[in-house]
Image (tube, rainbow, N blue to C red):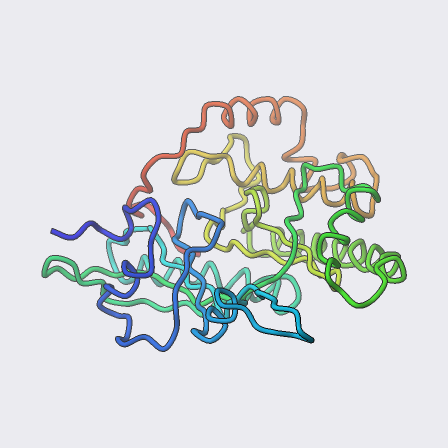
Length: 300
């Protein structure tokens, strides 16, 4: 009996090549990405020649360099078990809601596809995605995000550049703040119009690029926003909606606006001291476990 790919803590290239829907021989190589997803396996899709240069090196002006292979795409294999095709299609529709608002500037675009996953003679629906690879540094809403912190991110990305970083950092800082204002505005409009919010709270879910663009790269946990008493939990028991809205507010406060939360109708609902204390209690009790089947999901 083969172990279900959705239950494995991580995947190797042989695991991917053993999947019934992967063409063999595969024209690409697969390598586990350093970010392990709770809701999906994340594999880099690489050209063999790029991996060869990374491992064997290439001579440039008499100096041997080992440039890291840049992924063509990120292959995501979702861990969720779907009870029906309708449930799987509903999940894809939620992703498309996010892309409709945030693409192309603020989300790593993904091409979702549903496949028949055959294991031990049984066939089940499996959701996968081929996602744009975004090169950048993690933008953590809970970090200071002051000038010093942002400059540190910029210099990390500028290492090895032929240009003098000091000449470009001021323009980059302005761009980051401008793009943060655009991103938060779009997400707030999406919340009010669709009652959905993506997971902005997860570690590494937001990246800032060398051009100052801010992109959402994790689109696997999209929650409903309910303007009513009570704190909603996701299917793992985490208050992701409340924490995502808190992250949204922190981005505003730290990057471009310093204003009381009471002035905004979204923050006024979710950021009261009493509610935030209750949310933090739920966060402390949170222990990620197996992802349950989607049985009660109600598509929009």
